[in-house]
Each structure stands twice: as structure tokens, then as C-alpha cells.
Image (cartoon, rainbow, N blue to C red; front, top):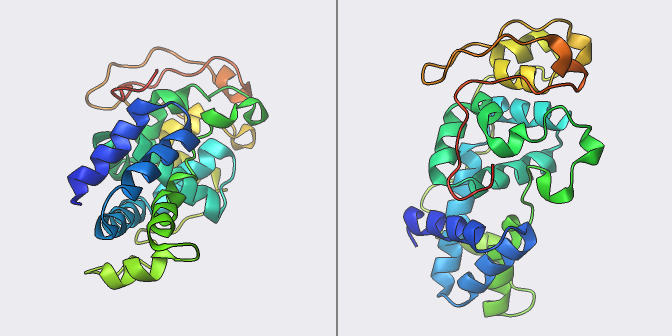
Length: 232
């Protein structure tokens, strides 16, 4: 299974079913019908994609959206990023602040996090288990995929986050590094926010107030990302 086939399975699963657990179950069933080598290759591609998104800047973006983000939560957030499709994933890995222009993220802004429905949370935990469960189904109860994947690998996984570490609770640093997300999910303790920068391919934003800091109208962020095949 090459990387294109890996992304093809992810993207087809999203089209097949809106429910995350059922999507992962569909992927598991597809893998269970394949050779063991392909199951291992899927898991290796999943690990590689997850590692690509494993940066302090992306973790800070998740922290801002969630209002805090654990190690496990960040893992599930990175697999959720994959559900947006390969093109969007690559763009967001390069620019995590562009999450402020993803419809599924924008729909959460200005709302109390406790009111978010389970399927709205930007997480996809179940995808992490699809290949391991398919592997166990093929090899028998108790078979674990992790050592087999490591033996199958041609290059080692990343062990540390590669970019600059920073304090996610520092309002000034968050505004500097993630200006659009800082405006979309404001910290009431941070004080007035500076104007959001205009992205080159987007329209000039309209005048805005600080009402969004109190859960009011969602601020206009230029250049909204459109994710094909997903509801806006």
C-alpha cells in the first residue's frame, strides 16, 4: 500500500459515513480483507502522517481550540486532521493557523465547549485502532501490530517535536504565532486583540469588534478553507 492508497482509504471512509466510529470500522473491514503486509503499511503511513503534524505549533493550535490539550488529545486531533483529506492536511501542517478557516473549526467558535456535540470535537480516536484490530483479526487474538510495524519500517519514527517549544498559556505568544485562531477562540484574560492579518488569497476582512471574546458573533477570518466532501 503506497501513501496514495492510504489517503484514498481515509477519504473514502469520510464519504462513506459521517460517524467517526463507523468510518474507522469501515477502514478496519477494508484492511482485514487485505494481506498482512498492507495492514502494516497502512499503520506505518498513519504513523508517518501523525508525526508530520506533531509540532509545537500544531499542538498550540489544538490547545487554543480546545482550551487545553493533553498528549492523548493531541494524538486524536492529528488523526482528525487526516479526516479532512490529504490536500487540507498538508496545507494545515504547513500553516496550523489556517485551522481558523476550516468550516468544522469555525462552527465551534463563540460556543461553550461543554455544549459541543461529541461528533463536533476535532478528534478521531478510533482511527488509531483500525489497523491494530484488523491485524489481530487476521493473525489471531492477542496479536499486536506495533512490533511488526517497527520491523517493517525502513526509517525510524520521530521521537521529539522538531520545531520551537513555546508556552501555550502566554497570550502574547499565542497571538504572535496563531493570530487567526487567537481571534476566533479568544482568551478573555488576554485583553484587546490586534487586527487579524489578511491572507494573500482572501478578501480584506470587515470591521470587527471584540464581542467575539465574550462568545458573541464569530469574527470574519479571510480566505476560508473549503474541504471537499464535508459539510460546511
